[in-house]
Image 1 (cartoon, rainbow, N blue to C red):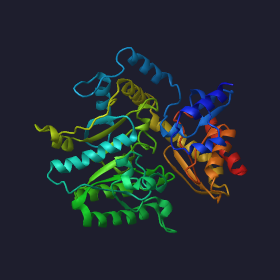
Image 2: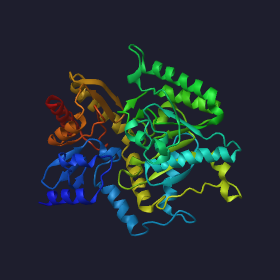
Image 3: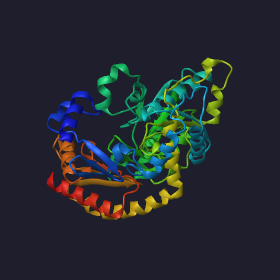
Image 4: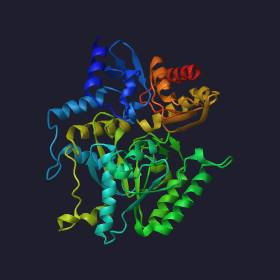
Length: 436
């Protein structure tokens, strides 16, 4: 059988990410033959609704014909050229369009291949900026409790998830964490806004005491993904931005997971009406097709690197930065946003799915049911340490791809999901909850 052979070959040849490989002795890999729309199809004719957008990247469905056509067209012209000393039309067009879409006055785009690489870029840019301004002592970073920014060494240094970080602690640079504004930590009767203001007051106190040594604050705006989709009020971002400006600390907005409409606006920062010093984007940037990430920053920061001395320039590089095929996929993705008025359409879908999901919100095992744009999450009351794996397997039996974060179940489906598929998703989750 094709799927069995492929599964065995994969286990012998592939080291799968974010996995304890020994678990696949009892939790079989799922070989996928093809994708179409919100569905993934295996070799046995079964299908799975991709309710987590294949790790939060797929916006407009698998094998989207419009993105496919754009890549095919580009493939006949130019697949890749290094961006050092060269340029090409797709990367210029994409940069211009991102500049128009991004909040505030963010200018030049610096490209890499994935989210963690974008974070590394922003951290290095911030540090180098202060060095170029004769303030090399500003070389520390602050992030939020429960933050996740990637797993390369710099990104992991500002991450605060023990599962990913603790084993590598000897390799990492120290960073400081301030309390998360995640409203799940609010006291009984305290509103999300009031809790956000209480958390940001602690940030202000910390920066007042330490700003001379702080290069930047890095945050995941509105939703902390790996923390179990921890959601917080935009007031935190609004005040954090003011505080950073007051104390001359950069603000890095990690919108790798939440950018491109996930929180209900094109970029999460829009909901606080702020402009970060660095905006990091990836995942949905190419519609989930190809590895592509970008850091947008202000012209004021760019000018500090613009100098006759080579060492004052930003000499950081990635081989496939601004890949032409990836940029064309991204341009096609932005075309769909514009032509199909996706942000408005998503609001209608959010309302429908919130209505359908009331049965989930009221389920006796469910706690903290929450929604932000096209992201939904809730906790399941359980003491089973193997809950996430069991839930994942039970969801596959209901033709759903769901991958819980601990006891947090979340779904963030592709934007093309229709009402019937949303009903299917909710019904399947209810079946799994009743069986777990």
